[in-house]
Image 1 (cartoon, rainbow, N blue to C red):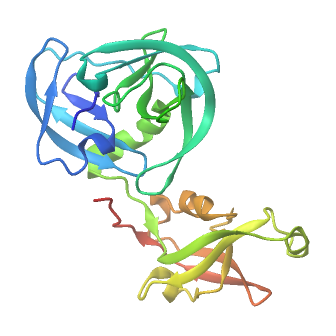
Image 2: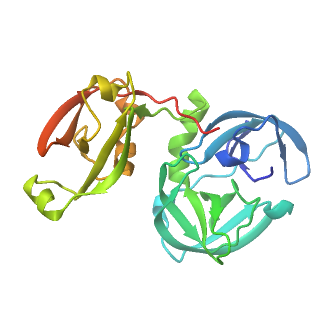
Image 3: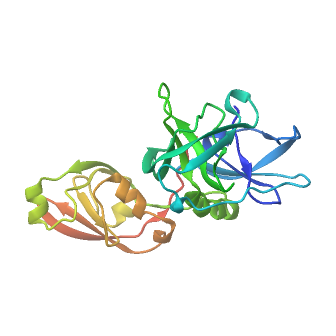
Length: 276
């Protein structure tokens, strides 16, 4: 497989997409001047489709990182990568929209996705999306096959959160409850009767044996509507709450059970889930 990436520190750390390098037996990076060198995987996070690899070479120039939160629709952006193997190809476009969402291969929702009409093709994955000031504001990651001018990039603000964790731990630590569930809607009447902030929740369809959920008393048929004082209106909300900070923290889970509101106390543990 082939993809793109960019050096973001002078000592050779390179950012790319997780799907470009995940599961690779060996990795080779080729610089714009044609120099090829072996690279080692530092860490990857399938949930945000980001990965860090490292190369060792002289006089590496780091790309400056910008801030994606400052972007506005209509702003000029430039995509750089190796589409279809054509090295160092540059395309230009504008920011079409902000705040899109996209599913990672792991099934987790990635928030804040940048939509652009800068032409991307297979091989652009992992390359930088650059502002007119020459700052990286996104990591190109996906196109919609058959569509024209609809391409997506992971915001660099997300990468700023992920990068230090990948360098430190080789992964992004997240917490885990051990429930199998699905998003379900709740009627407006029921939401009003229960004084719910959202007309939805997570229906628990299964609880893993020995999991924090089982120890906390959660069971199949419960509808989770809150966790750690955060509103849970669906699976995506539940995933957002289960961050690294929740590992080993005793939190309240608010559920609807047999028509009654019940509070359970659970202590999430570190998730070991991986995408292979």
